[in-house]
Image (cartoon, rainbow, N blue to C red):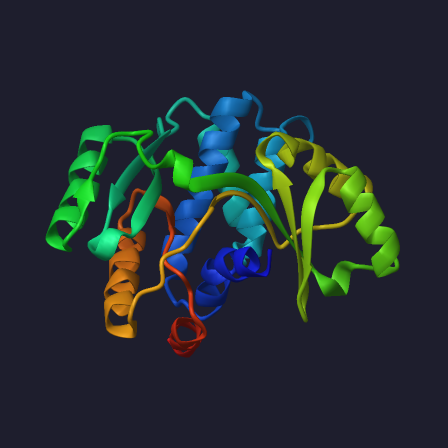
Length: 252
């Protein structure tokens, strides 16, 4: 699972040095809005999805008052009507992309995603035709500073909560669960009073494709173009993240 750990961590390595805070806040606000709407309750105590969205917002250092305003707006009569949509396609050199969006205008989002693909040597496909290339997993990031029990004891508790793999890094643990165990792990971490840096459902590639550095850079540029789009929440792909590529990301 070490390769999965490296892949799952790309957004957090990049995000730590990414100055596009406004984009991060927009994503967090949309996640809060969807959680309030789909959970039918603006009270995080009664809405697990909202609790998770709030935790993720805190993970990008969103101020508490901004979070509260987002919840209030999402539960009001004039709330934005966001919906989740996904897109699948190929970039250059056969790299598969899975794009998750939150939008209030599906036609605009479809046109934008298609345009980014076509202008950068890729093509938008039909929904479902690439889903088999990815595993949808729960991914929980736990800062080591919050861990008070022994590593062995915590591992047993996490396995009890549904952990399928656990990666220990220098400053954090990354815990993976099957899609269906995502809620169980949320409950277990709440029971343990163990906060998360973030908790997400990610699409982890079953296999990756390694490209020459110049070709791989073009894929990174394409990823960035998608991430700059207002409606895009997450970009998943199956490019092999070599040490050289990770070094470039860390230096950005």
